Structures are given as C-alpha cells and as structure tokens.
Length: 193
Image (cartoon, rainbow, N blue to C red; front, side, top):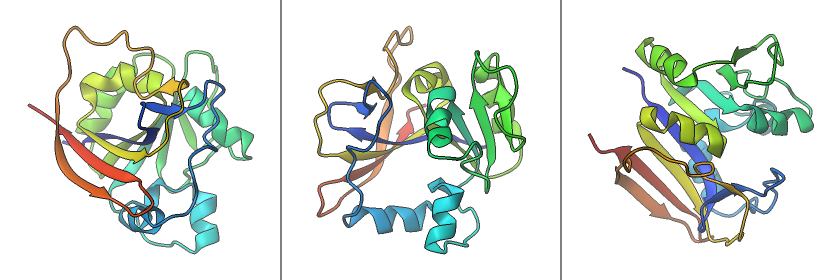
C-alpha cells in the first residue's frame, strides 16, 4: 500500500506560513537545499525543475495533494498546474471546477479519496499542504518529513490547522534526522502502529 507523507517546511514554533499565506520568511540557499533537493527532486515545482535542469524521474512520489490555499500560492506565482510532473489533486469545497485540466478536484471526503489513492499502484503520495488539510488527513498520514527552520514566527498558519484534533493523540517515531550547518533540521517521522 502506498504511503501518505506530509512533507513540509515549518518554523520551530510550528508554523508553515504567515496568517496571509506568505512563506518568504523561509531563507533560500544554505547547505540544506541541495542535499534535500537531491533526495526529493519531485517536490520542486515543474518550472523550478526546468530552470535548474533537473530531469530525473520521480523517486519518492508520483502524486501530490494540496489544499486550495496552498494551490492558490502557485496561482499567485503564475501557474495553476505547479507540479505537472506529478498527478495533482486540490482539495476544496469552494471550487466548482478543477483549476487546470491537469489538476483533479476533491470537493468532498478527502479522507476516503486518500484511502482509495493509497490502494492504487505507484510511488508515494505527497501531502504538500496546508495545515488545515493536514489536520483533516492526519488519520491517513503515514510519515511526516519536516524541514524545521530555526525561526520563531510568533503566529501564522499552524502545521496542523486550528488543532481541533483527533479524539486521541497520533504518535510518530523518528526515522532519521540531519542538522545542516545553516541550522535547518530535516526530520523524518513514521506513524507508530
């Protein structure tokens, strides 16, 4: 069965974006970028891959799921199909049609849709964001790959939405960790069965 991996960047106080959805406070560069990109090249938007000359096949994920607010970030930067090299899904109760022919819309019951996707053949499924969707899909998240930046934002969009949460805590164990010279920690967690 395929795994759903929440692969995301966060501050040390648990935010993935400002309240307005900006992510420009995450520094670009440093020594973490090339290492993580080499391991997960499919997590770069298609246009960035093209600019960098990355032509490798997808190694870890062949499907990406994102919430409407995360997808809107791509739209604001000029593309309605940010990950053309992956099968793309946008979860939204407000959109009535897919935002692009290459993007599939999930308008109801994202948990059931993810369960169906996990039963299909293929590589892993990347939950790109955002936090509200991660909260809804938490029962189906098998792994969390966290790029933890040494930044305290104070407030913003939390890693797991508003935190209304589950009836009981979801437990994960650390698989690997790596701390880079630029202060970014790359932590991989797996759900405890």
